[in-house]
Length: 202
Image 1 (cartoon, helix red, strand yellow):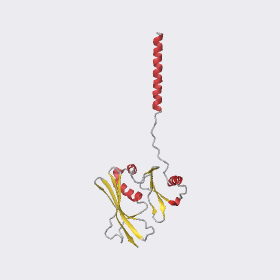
Image 2: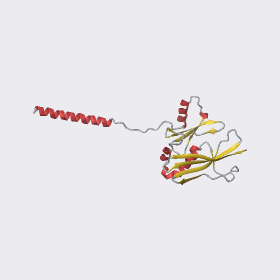
Image 3: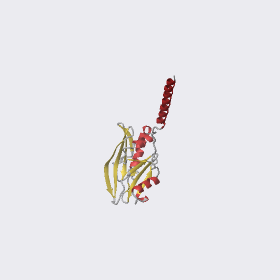
Image 4: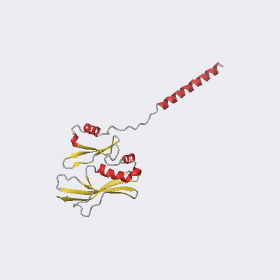
């Protein structure tokens, strides 16, 4: 009888210990947390750049908040003869590749499925060509070459085309090219092409 009681108590103690261990395992299991980075303002981006380049001054860079997209900043290094060009992008506090290969994150966060044409057009104008001049109306330089900015869906692709004027720099001429941006139907960057480049001296 005593032996039976001892066995039963041993089993109960073992079971209780096992249950406690299982509870501990569950409560201590790692929880994935998605945390935004800290690059969420012009000031924090400039500070991060100055950590990389201690001699960098505020007027050496152009940092723009792209208001057409939530939490998106672009930056470029300033050159006196060319102005700024887009070098780096920061979205939701973290840096994205400057080659636009992760632009689908921006598109998805802005409801690409319902606004694909407008989003691609805005990305073309305010991100890729933020520091350049978009030509909205023809002028005497174009002759019959000009076409107004347009965005369309073609063969399951979203395509934006617009004429761009390059910064003049130190050369006395006006330079233009036709810029073509393409995304696929899921909001992934496909290509950025330049064509029909020409210059006019003045």
